[in-house]
Image (cartoon, rainbow over all chains, first blue to last red; front, side, top):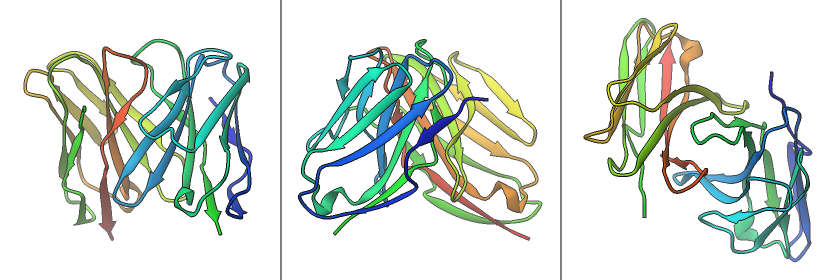
Length: 113
Length: 112
């Protein structure tokens, strides 16, 4: 079974802090994704990566950056956290082929105070 | 901007009822249509990936159909059970890239 592990289930940070959300997958998947989920808005793509050191902006990249130094790990970075970044963050991974399903982590509920 | 619409937004049924919901997507540049089930406090789980017009997939009491020419997919649940309570997401792949475009989901609640 594919395992996608997010480092924290719940996280509370302060405005202005630099925040790191970590995601690790154990199935050698090429693609990795970061989404945020907000009530009434559904899952929105922040960034994705199709290979080590490669990244592509999603629909809402502003205020975020990502890092993929190793194939199994994809980090989401909030450069200077703001209250409007309070949300549920989900990481996912998939094989390279276009119609492969994505496998999701359990999510990190992040609160910015 | 590509848009994926799901309806209804939510519904409540009784145990044993059969139900269905709809996903609408752009019919041009279609590559694949995904369905996911997302139970509370769990991670989204892939149900089906469909790529061909007329595709039908089945998993137990859940099935899905695909019409790429008119841009819609139906998800059917036969004889709903309380454990079917979840949010059902559909997502669309176009030919442009690897990212999925998700609908906002249909939240199903099944009472016993």
